[in-house]
Length: 358
Ligand SMILES: NC(=O)c1ccc[n+]([C@@H]2O[C@H](COP(=O)([O-])OP(=O)(O)OC[C@H]3O[C@@H](n4cnc5c(N)ncnc54)[C@H](O)[C@@H]3O)[C@@H](O)[C@H]2O)c1
Ligand SMILES: [Zn+2]
Image (tube, rainbow, N blue to C red; front, side, top):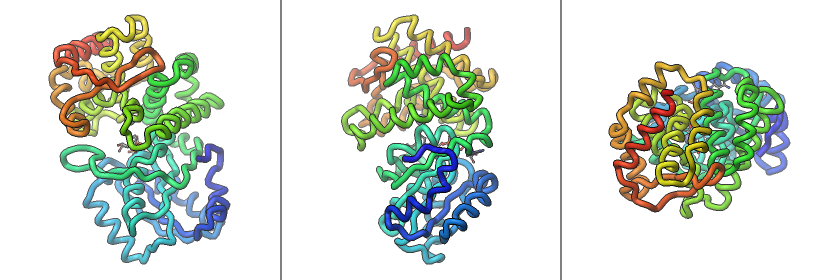
């Protein structure tokens, strides 16, 4: 893991250190190709790399079997052999898809993530999960495939739309809520400065988030102990909202933010956190400048029962029943084993919606 300005300038040294041939399959999406393609190609040429270019769609449709098959064909035709390393330059979509190809093509090529969205920097490029989607659900087909290296350079964020900055910030907030109460205070205190990408605040947020995720993943890499599952705080609710918004009208982080409000409400309903802690989370969530019409249509006006029905894909992943990540207190979370009655979940969702509407 390298978090630094101009992190890519030293990529040649990283290959030399590992005795790897300087050959890469360079993955972009159409946006990151347009924004960073030329710069990166120049850097690679200067460091005497050979590269083969793959560009995918700049949305969730890239993470499909059909696209994987197309790309395998392209790599075989281009004679890409095991001397190549996959370099994924983009957000979570490129990282997940290129990672999936890296894990499977010729039984696995080394993988380097170069995250270009805040969400990818603080979340998807860390922890070694790669996946594509299935018609029956997101991220259902994939691998635990740790990258050889993740290179984080915040300069990429200068081109990122504000909406995506806040989406990434929601995932950073997740780490604070589940594992680091002082980090929560930091985000509350410096919220505007972080969102404006000011130094050193944005750097601190990236570093603290990366460390929080690494700490958790190290102890429970394959998600068997219930610890890594706490990274899904707010996600059971969030995934339902994303599905209702047809993976189109909500950013992942926005859905997770609303989901965390519901999850906090549930933790309050079962008596873990008090009213003040619940409202602290709601007050912070309200500072995210999500369009009121979006908030209304895809959260406040969504019937709680519809949310519950749309949690089916999470149910499948956890053995046929819903398991919730609950806060024990601010900065501490656990995967609950308790069967929570539908009526309790529905009223917790309603309470979160009412609090957010005030
Ligand atoms: N593997 C994991 O552990 C993990 C964790 C969280 C999320 N994910 C996955 O990540 C994906 C979401 O990732 P995301 O939010 O980064 O979305 P994304 O990859 O779709 O990127 C969002 C948009 O920003 C554009 N973009 C990327 N970098 C840019 C930049 N620097 N400047 C301007 N535009 C830029 C992209 O082209 C895209 O249009 C989902 O598919 C989700 O399943 C995976
Ligand atoms: Zn997430």
